[in-house]
Picture 1: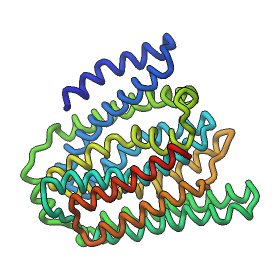
Picture 2: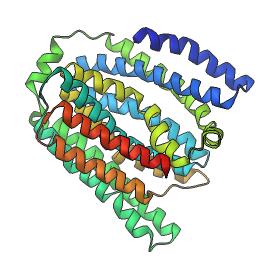
Picture 3: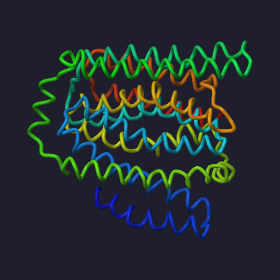
Length: 351
């Protein structure tokens, strides 16, 4: 599989540059850009996995989520610049339901096929449940409800206020988990598993690959954004579907692959940290940052989602909490989460 991704990079990066310069057909370039970003994401995933073996599952999962979300953040910034507010909000929705249902579900399912019952830190799961409830059900729903009785300017002011509170609480959550209450989230079994495995790349090489891959992703993402309008018209896709499904899957390809791989290796603490941690990072950091960044563009982005987006995210959060709060997983729970994602994807496609 790694050889396939390497070949995709060797072909995809030059084609992306040449195709952009000589204006190759838009649909063709859309496919090339997506495949190249996915290949780059795989290398980012391998690099963060190597770092995980050095720094431990908690920080490793956070790094994986961060660099995985860096791809989506870059795509979203260029989308904001192009005035595609609907695509950005939809991609945030897609990240939430994709990470909780698709990534989490595939991790539970693939890992569950190999191991009858897999366990992860129950304290971590309950801590994340509270944050998910706050970030999605409180911070996303409140602006939607209040916006109907507010002017556009006041809605934006509310969004900025919520964005700042989310960022501050996210920083506090990291401080809580990684510093002041680190012992509560320490899983001896997970640490022992990691100590017995050698990283694929050295720390320096992994960091270098992450940096280079992020730079290339930034270039290709900017080109990818300019294909959305043509692709949408050609296939009859709405901005909502492009954002919720296409951008979210491409933008989060790194953690998709990494979480499933970790689950297959029975490293569920890392897999769950990637899936849920990435969701929290999107809701509490990426989304608020995009709201603040939009202030510097001609068209601002209030933190107001459509009703289908809100319902999908709230449902994903509640289902994930119900199935993961016991600190155990199996293949059937994974199948349930993936099924929920497929139903939502079908709904957004037909909407």
